[in-house]
Length: 233
Length: 233
Image (tube, rainbow over all chains, first blue to last red; front, top):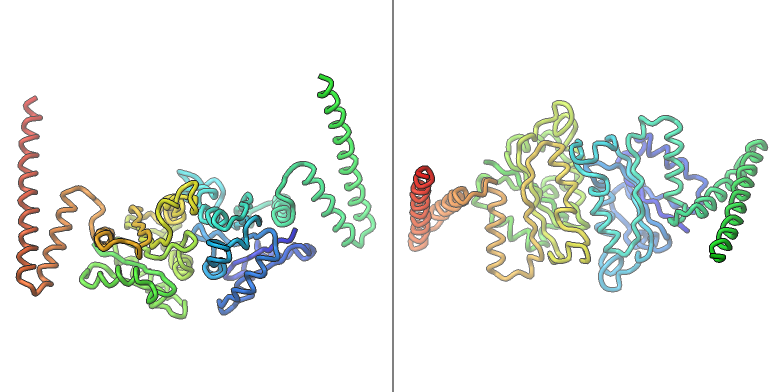
């Protein structure tokens, strides 16, 4: 699975949270990071090139700061010119059909304000309906949004947790069964083993992989037993 | 009441519907038409000037084509830079508090598609939540949206009806009692009388005004009778 990460931020070097997440992606060969303001500093988008990029990826993610409950202007411009009728919607406009689509939102206000009675009034689910409608019109499968609230105030452990959820959003199959999450984790551990130069770390990664695979064998064994028990009734 | 009409359209001369509505506003001294792409062709917004404009008006209207369920990029840029913390929200950020806010949307798809089962999936009310949240955060009173669906396909009479609803959106007090709608209509007729050079037209306008005022007297008279009847029980 190949993922196209379309990032939009008017001043990305000033954003430590954007830097934190983007710098973590160096070893993910299956993720294409595409920062619009960097690729098109004059705002003139190469429509054909963008459409080719979309065609060659299976999952499309928009990542941006959630200013005024929407994207920066550059990403809206991209939507308006790239997602043409005849390409993304309308007659014969089925280039995006069946692909997955999701949002990664950086949000400066705390989560509890996103409800009736809060300063932001509506939930993220309500405020992102324009993107849900876009996915619907273009025939894309909408993934659960990854909303990152007040990243700068997070403890180190919470930041690491969020980073893992971010990697999953970008690379893990959307089937979230235990088996598929295990498969994803093992592939990440194998990559980490190849990267590390510390023999001790490599041993720990191998130990974790063995443990997960052993647990998987136990679970599979139990399932067979359970099936037999069921059939005997 | 003074109204600031903030128009955003990337190519307004090509839009016959935008031209139809904007050209009708010449005689409305109380409406300031402010087309962002025209005022700022290089995209560089004079923030202080925009904030002064907002301060000196009582009703703020955004008018734009509803591409991908949101505004053109220029208006989003305007929101991001003009509606600063300390001006429009946050501590001491109460410059917009108590003003009225509304949307005039030009929509290319038919109204019936804006529901579950339709190509657009959600209603206009659902898709405009980001603007409702903006009004809430800045303390503005949200007016009913004027959604203009498929203007180009309308019959002449429907176009005229829409134009009157447009004028009301821009200039009529949001109290929509019969009395206040009458008051608005009389003021419009008086203006039309002053403008016209045709004596016959002027007579017709005067006749309409007299009729409305006479009806108003009858209604007021009936109300007094009704009150007396109520008190006698």
